[in-house]
Image (cartoon, rainbow, N blue to C red; front, side):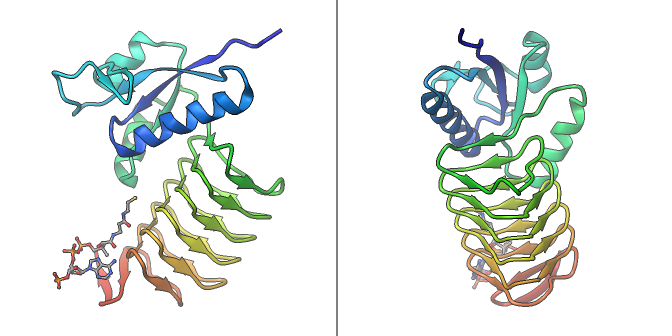
Length: 214
Ligand SMILES: CC(C)(COP(=O)(O)OP(=O)(O)OC[C@H]1O[C@@H](n2cnc3c(N)ncnc32)[C@H](O)[C@@H]1OP(=O)(O)O)[C@@H](O)C(=O)NCCC(=O)NCCS
């Protein structure tokens, strides 16, 4: 007997939202039967004249969309870490499943948590502990025994060496990397294309033009 697909609402009708929808379509195709049914997108700022986004209904604001879909799971597809956290906090009773692209490699000894997004081609290696609502975007790699704090965002192509520690709300820009054992503090930013060859203090930006206090 085939199980019923579960409804899911994607919050965030933007680029990341379209990537999450694509990933869900790939999960369904790989399973050979629908695992998820995308009820639609919720967004406070979506174009009020549009009725669809990425081929799915635009359901209005998150509060309205979730009221109309009381049983649906939710994925918050917003790249800005603090905004993602604020929206999650508005719906404490919802189920936020992790969404993992079928092409991603996740070691059996790695731990994923609710609301995580593991995109196409990502690799999450042995002994990794990912917090909740973490984005591991396309082709990013999380090296063995790394710890990633809740609400961190690893942009495409990021490469974390083994035993890296990221605090909460860290932004690793596209194609940035860490050397083994590096600690990146809470709410720090590593600029796109930048190597974190030493620890990064909380609340600072490491960039090719120096370390800035945010
Ligand atoms: C480092 C960063 C946070 C700085 O942002 P910002 O404070 O708004 O800085 P600005 O965009 O005003 O740029 C300031 C200067 O640094 C340069 N610069 C910005 N980011 C840079 C980077 N990653 N590498 C090299 N130079 C960079 C800009 O060209 C600019 O130079 P200029 O003063 O000569 O014109 C941002 O550029 C960055 O790298 N963010 C990562 C975001 C990302 O990867 N997103 C992908 C989403 S999937």
